[in-house]
Length: 342
Image 1 (cartoon, rainbow, N blue to C red):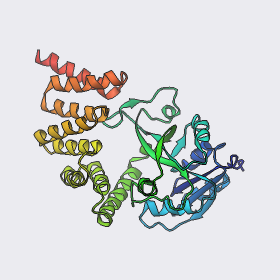
Image 2: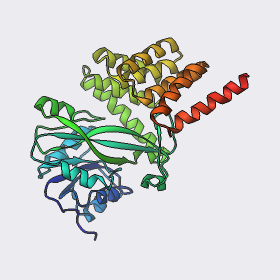
Image 3: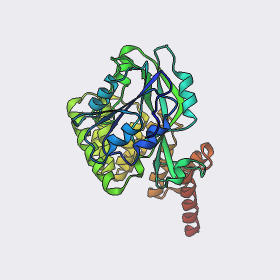
Image 4: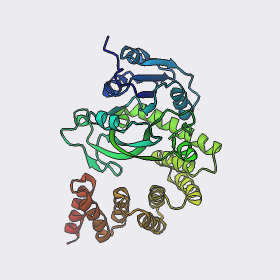
């Protein structure tokens, strides 16, 4: 049996899992030296996930799946006994340098932290705007690109801090209600979930779509429920319904730049380019630094054959990120089209 994970006294690791035997050991090994308590809530595994986790010193408990990620997540939090809680998924890993970074952050003051998440994919595309360096461990596992998000994953162990949302669950509401601030921590979580097989990916996509519909039904006045539903509908290429969901979200929160970007994408894919371009402009007026928005706008101009405007968008990206593979490929395509015209 491998040695137990426990070392430091401050942090409980809380995980929910189902059929993650292929990856949970890597995740648990990645926090060795940081956490002193590991709680894995299993929601119905049949592949030995529980045994893998227990062999690495985790406290494993079974929980009936209730079609609600927040419910399972909160059950894991209720079992934590250390002053701080770190939340990870089984298909994630903490980068090695993050051990020292997080260790230096935990203290007695009531503050929460968002951590950077690198979402790896097989190839660069519209949402994966950075190439994976050869020296990054993900490269050896087949990843070639990634995009970043920032998610609250480290916070004090307080029974009032809980997640909400059947899917895309978040702890932000409870932190806001309690007046607990949060700030960005430069620790990095590597997320390998997008590298799963096609069949399992389709299964998860259907599950997430069903949960997103339920989330809207339960909380129709929360803009995020409509935004998340729109994202899932986009993943299923249902851009008509996605646009309607995003419009509903915009009526509740009109200044969220990623929402405006996704709405503009669906509008353009439905052929309504005038409306889509106008909404892209609104998104950039709200956040002109978002490279994903510049990329999506450039793609729309390319579709329309507006090469000068498309080139300006992709050059803006390259100025900020000289090695951006998507933008460089697009600029090459623009040059080819210009050559054909000449």
